Image 1 (cartoon, rainbow, N blue to C red):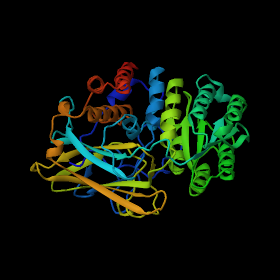
Image 2: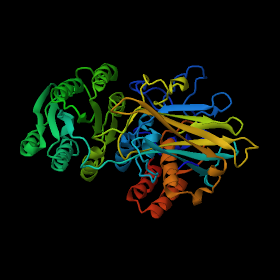
Image 3: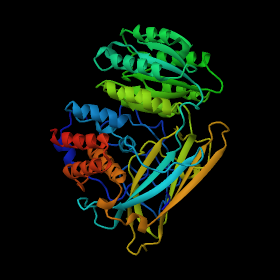
Length: 500
């Protein structure tokens, strides 16, 4: 080892199944179709391999490699948490298991340099999990970690905040939450950082051009001046936001556009693709995009796709304390970039592995032959980020304890030199052989989060694990870690079970 909204829970439970073996991720970052309905979207064909739908087993003999772009989004879990707390279940199409898993802290070792540390481990499935068909199925965790950055030595930041001030943002917990978080962030950034402010509703306007934090009072006044207006022309907001970012571009600094919106575009271009094309053009000019979602009614698909194509990531906030945490802890930690176009390729040994399935990453798949094609888009990862991918692996009948199950390779571009680098790790049958209840509490948390997401996505298969058992697993992991977020996960699973 290397170190739907409105859909009843009973209907979901009938479809709850958590397969013993897990399939390849789905499509590229921009391939989720607009207006997807219930159920996970079908994955596109990998060149040279059979078409696989997310949730199906992949025979290692037919396709031994699983390749996908990294993703550090967490908005799917945040939005599901808001809805379940409010007494509603999320639309299945908005549930992305990898974002549930990546919402929780890990304890992976840090690398010495600016790349990744690779950690691969696993365990047997818990006793309450009954794989179908029965067989020797193991949980495998691929964990990646970047080195954190000292806030005092990071490059200066030039941030352009694009704030939705449409009528829908007048709901409590939207614009007021955004303004509070922005005030908090302005007070936390360094005096040598810069901030610009753009507001949009039916039209867009520059509220404050790029301003050094030494003039923080003027920025606070600009934030206080924001008022809700009319419709939502998200395209106009982004176009002007990128123009303001480009006008205030600072060489040698981290230049980022941060859009804060409920994602409910209703005028201008309201479809993702035309806006995505503009975002992609600007991202190529080294201005990355962060999406911050708010509101109980939230355009999840649009915000997620914008962030993916903008070489950034998406988060969702619903409470003032959480928003402050994101803006004070998460955002400053991601102002720099550790890795561009990061991809993972896991190669399974068909002599040891009968089949496998990757949980989530349905819209992040990369063709196996494109792993080393640096023209193919991957994911952006910042300092101090952990990224986790879970597989369920069905072993062959005669798999020896010392046999290698899989080799994990990670490839990325250095954000300064654009030079490619790689690192790798591997895992044996013995590394996946420990009892689940003796596994690390962080691994058990990953399992509970991933399979809770799988439950919410219910795909019509027979059940393998039940929500009460998942809640118990999460509760025990919370006790072992002392992590309130994990305890909150256990409460959330209990709430979802009670919804009908």
